[in-house]
Length: 129
Image (tube, rainbow, N blue to C red; front, side, top):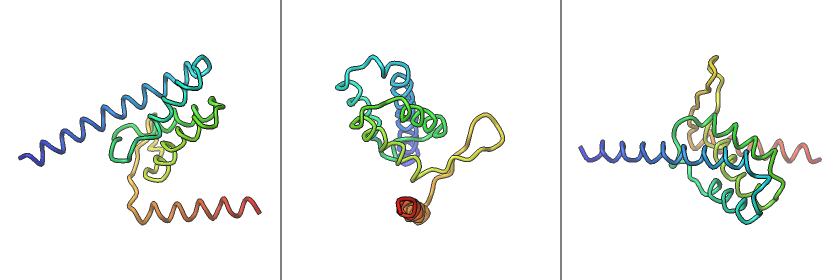
């Protein structure tokens, strides 16, 4: 009985965390031009400090917001911090178009995630030379 309660609590926390990440991301998109670098970096650090266990839900929406943030923000320190969340999403989730307005996600196994890392490193190394 307590295991079910623990799972429910974790699911609620993940849902709340996703909501907070989406709110911060939307705020950054709307207000990044007016924020001081200190505030901008602090908010991006919050985004980058998330673990894969912390998020559950509409990952596709969060990914789209992160891509937009990546195009808007020019502060390299803030981008590096926020980029950690995008890396986490790309490494652990596959966003697939399911023919509807929203996208679904499939969580990768550890071996699939490792294969993607090797493939992306290979692509990066080949494109440089």
